[in-house]
Amino acid sequence: MKEILEGLIDSANAYTEKSVRIIRQGKLTMAEWRLLQQIIAGNNTQEKLSVATTLDISTLSRQLKRLLDKQMVDKVAIGVDKRQLVYSANEEGVRVSRNLTKQLEELKTIIFERWTDEETRLLKILINRLNNSINRS
Image (cartoon, rainbow, N blue to C red; front, top):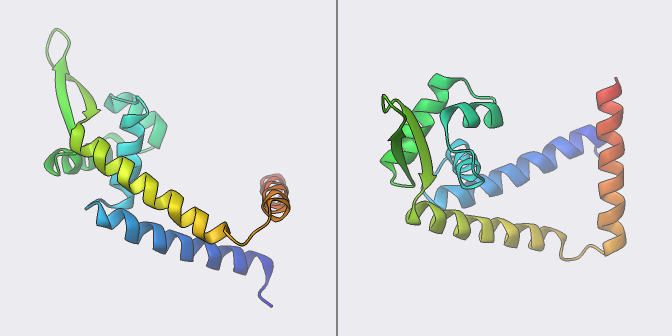
């Protein structure tokens, strides 16, 4: 039997690999997907996005440019000098987001379809306990 942390890492890597495959179907990278989700959630300026994602402005700017190039988001210049940019997910970005969210939810359903409610509840408790132990160490 695998050691606990080794098993968790293997499971996380396998899930990430499957998630990345799904997200690539939407022609996005994982980073672009996460950024698109933040924009849809209402973080619509570089300042807000930088705080929400903990990305530096130059990295954020590159990722925003890629989302603009892929026509997932739109930007509007506001303010007196038109230097403040507000980003919003356009119709294509929202469509892709909904589709990928649905596929990721289906993956989660498949993963846990044979688990009882008690087993999933117990796993949540144990993961929370593990996180608390790691944070205290």
